[in-house]
View 1 (cartoon, helix red, strand yellow):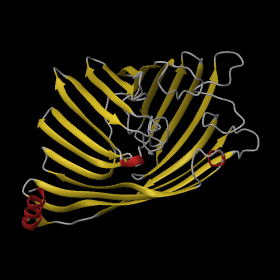
View 2 (cartoon, helix red, strand yellow):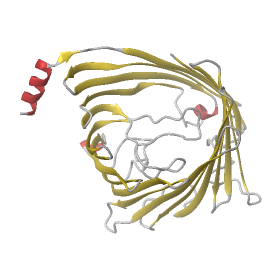
View 3 (cartoon, helix red, strand yellow):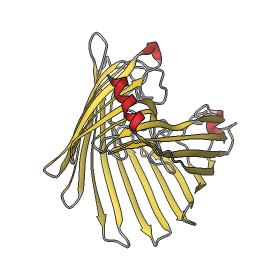
Amino acid sequence: MLALTAFLFFNSALWAFDADFEGRLKVGSSFVDSPSFHKDFDSELELRLGLLGNVVEKGDWVLDYELSADAKEADGSSVQSGLRRETDVDFFRAWLRLDNGEFKVRGGRQKILFGSGTIYRPLGIFDTRDVTGVVPETRGVDGVRVTRFPSATSLVEGWLVPAKKNNALIFGMRGEMLLGGIEAGAVFQYHPKSDLEGLPGYKQEMVQLGYHFKGEKGFGFWNESRLDIEMEPSAPIQFDTVLGVDYTFGIGEGLHVLAEYFLTTRQSGFSLSDLKGQRTFQQIGVSLDQPVGIDIQWQVFGLYDLRDKSFQLVPQVEYTLTDTLFLYLHGRVGGALKSGKKDGRLFRKTDVFNGTEHLVGLTLVNYF
């Protein structure tokens, strides 16, 4: 029946293939306070090329696509320490989507993002972004996602993502709706052990439950939480939650201030991933950003670990050179309020480059 429906759709549809070309060139270099025997500069060159457009149209239905790939060449401390590859060529997005406005099916490499957290994202189960970085993006995953909109203010969504290991599948579903002006949602996912390196907890078999809500009462507020139940005989659990607020002050052209409190805790039987071997810790994250005229915007992130007293400051200034060309001046400074402490989660002094070192850099991004 499904095959017959697909045949009738394509047989009677209006072929409307079109393609829009887009791309991006990103080049940057940072001077890093590197450990001994490491390079002082960390550099990257990235070229991304892509096509997107429609394939078929019939009534309210549209079959569209996005296909893009990027090539990266890196050099410096991060390559020496194995934090990133010297050369990396891969698809960034590669999906087909069938959509009629109320129902959509998307298959291929795509981003699956939801939740209300900004700096800390307990529901970022497929999120690989570094939100403090220059133009943060998630790599996306290969899978199938089905979304239904029962009303203009609600959705139900499900997904299947191959785990690659033992032919297992990650599967989940979520719902989201507007309740009295509050955007609220709930999530369920079964996560088998996988080979999807880079995703949180990819080596663990878990059942994951979560919720989020976000509202506005003169200022923005939100809460996002996730409970992981590891598939071990004792069924140990891990709980992550974030509480956040934001407000834009009438200073200059608008000073936006955002603050989040993050807590993570896990039972003794739950697989431990913390570098310090601690099962419970709390952090505070603050972000300030403000435009200066039409060509400049500055932003600074401040992160502080309440348990080990380490901190990190990440400033960034964006200069709009043309409609498609942007220059970023960025940096990172870390430390610890405890005298002599150099092994914190947010700042560490090690013999091998670890990604928390002080740096200052320039990045140029051109869209075409």
